[in-house]
Image (cartoon, rainbow, N blue to C red; front, top):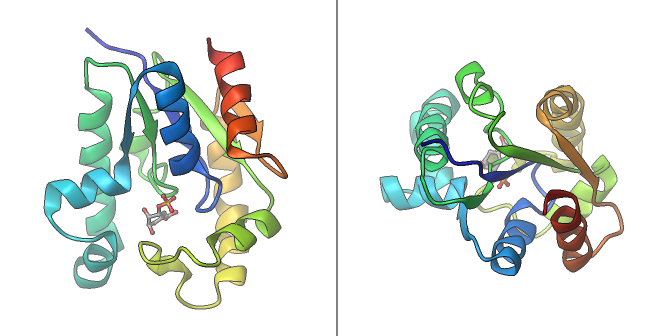
Length: 170
Ligand code: S3P
């Protein structure tokens, strides 16, 4: 049986983890964050995998983690890490029967939000402002093409974003 999960996508700093956790508890589902799941499965940090094995190796582990998570028969809320949309085979997983919710934000908002939380974000080690703007340009069309629901998170609280998602999806 294929179960439909709620999958949050979007760039680093868009609030996928915070919103996902809150949404899951509000609607009574279990929450899975793919970065946390990668770390749990490998016993290593995202940063260590990136730095020791390289980004393609990380993307493969991330893909397998996403695939296994979405194969769960228990309906979940899933925060898919920002780059989990980059592989073709990962994108192929992100569609029906799942609800794909894009937390959309302008680069200025993302830059503000990731300021202090960069441990698991090695891509932002050098010049995070420029890098986030670049990722925004590269990935905006990808998130747009995958999303069945888009929530603009600019200026909204976690509770506000959750309420908006819950209203659209339930
Ligand atoms: C990445 C996003 C991060 C983490 C890694 C790479 C990306 O997750 O997987 O640093 O390429 O966008 P979050 O989106 O949860 O910050």
